[in-house]
Length: 508
Image 1: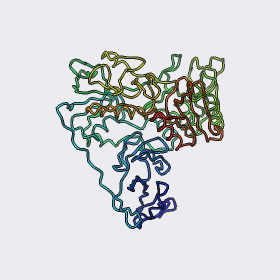
Image 2: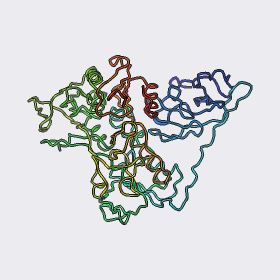
Image 3: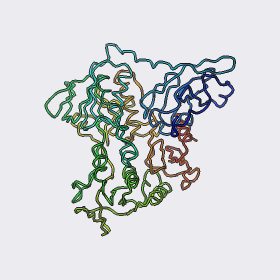
Image 4: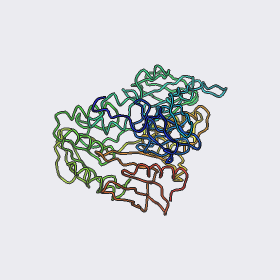
């Protein structure tokens, strides 16, 4: 065993453990080099892989709900009996082991084989499904269609040059240089061939003919569909100022964008980030990891105050300042002339690379052309179906009736997009699943994660439990005395419990 490789945790489960050791409901042990999580469920004991298949979060630190376990890091959820990843962001199952109980002891035996999906059939089953978009929602839908046993054709039309990637990593570890590029693809290239998914990259979709049920491509090709998912996502807002189109001025959305910023950062001495958004500040942290001087210009007085409130905003600013980020708040960039960025206040910042993170706008042109109902997004019902039968929408463009806030909302979160893609896939197959997941996102700043569950655009009270500056807190965002959202730092189980409470409508 190398010095870097720690021995597997806990007892050797092939030798058995006393059932009394599971009094707390969970126990970590091992079979050979595989770490195993034992979970007691009624009279049964279930054995599964101990780590989330998303970012390797320790499931023993998560939350068991019935016959499922939720990851403490990014709220993925797994079925303890089948191992299936039933909720994104995890897409791959965890392994399951056979368990034997004898004489008050629990023994873990061999691995169980993963069950293969049964082929779906029926007169109303679509033969051809077209997915427009190659992001989180589109990929999650295609993957779920095959997981559910759909045997018809799937065409996935993406304007991107790269197959679907783990976009949150683009502004975090990959941009910082601490994650290799081979971590980014959501699936290897041969997955699409092996799964019979017709992934078409660099594809321009010119329109949708809802009468003939065809998608019109820019080169004149028509792609027929029986059901369609519109998952066109969002595009970065570009600054309407002189010089914003120069080669060293970048937005950050795609893998190509991220590669361009990394290339520009080589040899750069100073970077300018325009916008104190989540993307902007994550990019600032990543560029500081590359030992580049970073200046942030934004019009607000506190970063992230609109979403997280003043206390968390002050904390985020102080955290970045501890890492030598220089803020120019209450200001804007009015022009970029070569390497010189002029501020509204009259100041000038010279920068070798500029990253613009001032928000995104949903791509609605195709939906509008097709005559779909719009309301600051594509209007969908609780099944994610649009106003046109057979066409569904998911991800950044979808505005849906949220049962938890009682509002019609549109959310630009990665996990929401994935979960909507999964539910839309089921509904395109006629399974009639309502989308009722509580919105969740996470943001990473240096070594500090911020988790956020729920949705509240207009809170009137923030109740703080713990110490924000001590990086140990949970904040409840209320309106009219009702908790609609919760943010936390290093309160992983409480964040999971808050998500569950919001699902059940029982937040205290």
